Image (tube, rainbow, N blue to C red; front, side, top):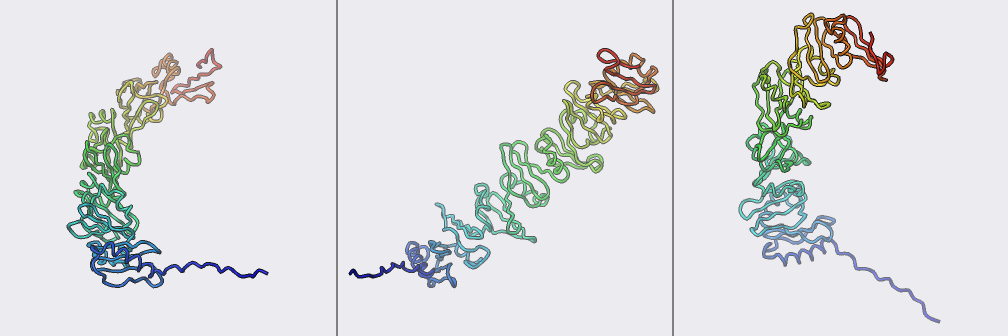
Length: 440
């Protein structure tokens, strides 16, 4: 009878403790870097219960910061700077997360959990707080840091680099400014306040928002700021098609107003009308009439375009209207006050001149699709097309019908229209004749 027995399961050797692993790993790393680190200044130690583990030397240290990780060396000027900021246990910089990297000129940097320390071949080591990817997404634009951060009240810190400035607000918000925007900022910092984000650049130049405005830096136009109400109006209207600024804001205009010149026009602000912008043929005609110091006053809001024409209202209540056929024309007074209501009906004015001296002191202005009449006690009303033809055959304002006292009202189904006059009404309807007729 065969004998029986049990196979004894093989057991794996126990994993080394943090201290055991670190002693072996640090010794191996030390032998490879002995010339840099110098002589040991203590034994391998570990935090109670596990990692990190470390050993210090006369010129640096080796650190195992996580389970079975290879030791990270911190040495030289970076090591000295790190220790002054609390070393491994300090919250300012924290533990090393990668080895020292140096270029051919022995300019070195090393990343830690809460920042990066930079040490050039000449000069002191410098700390750049924060995560590496935040700080140096713009490495080519920033260059090397020149000094440690300078902090003010409210946890706002600034740090100067070779070609830029970096700002932090608390522990989360980081901003950088560089290039022409940075150069401009250095000369205008009190007016601008601190930056947000980073410059946004394209072929035409760079822009960046600041606490009190936005900087536009163009290699062809120059570098200028838009601030206050003009900046807010410009941004809320998508730049209004007028391009980038070509000057700083200039104040002291009529009524305490301000202006800023843009590529294709101007932006204005005045206490009585608020912000606005103006460009194109409307700007040219307005300027020739005396601009804000003339009879029209400041523009209101911005130019509005509809059905092939564009118009803008002014402080006086008048409108300047541009159309392809007539250029820029003015409509003002009581007739101008009705323009926006009937712009779709009448189109653009074809002349800036009103014809006055009509019956009972009346006036008219010609529009692309008809006319607008005004008379004392009657007001301003439009007339066009067949209604105007029929009215003229009855003597127009000199006939029994007199001046119009309403617009033309038409049925939605297109079967009839009516317009009222001082002396009666004209009615057009499909049942009043072939193709439609008039009564009376």
